[in-house]
Image (spheres, rainbow over the protein chains, first blue to last red):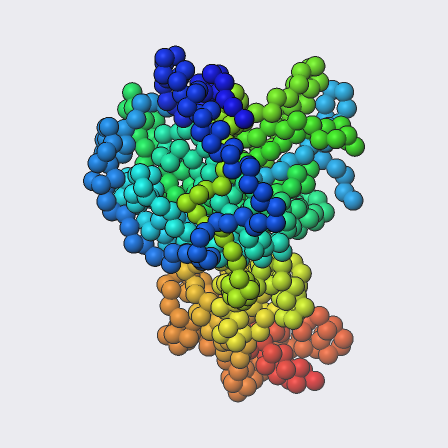
Length: 95
Length: 486
């Protein structure tokens, strides 16, 4: 599996990351290198091996239904580029 | 089978095919993956944890109650419960989705196939298949009209648990779609897994519609998003089916697309959708373990289920002897059923209670423009009133009089009877006196009666009741009159 220049641009667009041609070109190589490394895993024969989701057998790491968080407007908005009246203020996104 | 609903086109009839995806907000104190409050409203961004705001490094932890609610809902719909399910990331970009993905369950939903039998208005009952129920996060809310250049984002809803309940494409008319949503809403309310409040958006539907010539394979469907009332859902189905028929008969083709419903006009319009809007790139969420359900957990869910509308209705009919019509009315919504059962708990006879609730009480509530939840009369007070009728303290007309006073003043019926002397008179002495006076004053009618004009008996009853100011026991009056005229 490998990605071409058009796929790199498409992925960037889906994530709303603006890439110049100069930035996109090296990314194509980097992404393909990553995909190559991942594909090496295919060399291992996993026939009969069950998929593993956790190293230790925990199945019910569930939370109790209680309110333990919130009321932290300042912390929530601390990194917002802009805010108004307690809202995040973002460029108009109406369709 | 009743006549099939069709859209009459210029070239002949078209059948419509409808499937619904209902988003129901799970009743829980906190969110699906964080400890922030899941309650509606609140000042902007105050029900938000750093998990909901998707700050780097924050990890979701599953709320067990949301799992329990989804499983209980599935059980109530007779659905398959999947002992192993998993969360996936659905990736898309929007300002009110700070993670850049919604955590949902595409590949392994928690609940599989089930069914719901509904009774559409004017049609035969129909069983609608349920395809699946999965758990997912709600997004935040964007406000677009407060600034000319900015959109404002409130994340209070971000991360609140939703159940997406997906039907099979089994509905064939707007009435069936409406009946399905109404029945589903009642099941959710009985189970207590969703409050069903469509005004506040805790239940909304994506409406999938296609049309076809009878007997032909499914046509291409469109999806109308986020319709938030039963009436609008029915209107969206109707409008969209007609629009599709017009397009097809005009030689056009239906494009699979997302549309928006306009509640003011009752129409749908295409969303200017970008071609890649549906490239969600789903993959398993690596931050979350699979959901594995144990036997003990499932038994506990099963045991916590209340009696459901259909079972309650059958019990009312077969065990309590209530008429089929009244049983349907009394179980149609949870508030009514709860009120009625609270009334039964006071020890009153079921059939009488059913007649009184569907007759006197509903009549009064209608008149006062109130519903059962805001009824000025409590089940306990109503029970007392019915008991006073049953033991002969109140005659039928007196009971109605006392009920009116209860509606007006909120006083208890016993107190009203005492304070206003509305007690029915069963004292034979007083009644006999009245009867003697009436017979003496109407000697001619007594003679006619004795000569065989038996219809005059009603006249004597009426006169006696009048003389007793309506407080005499009709049974005693009948009995004493018969004796006096014998």
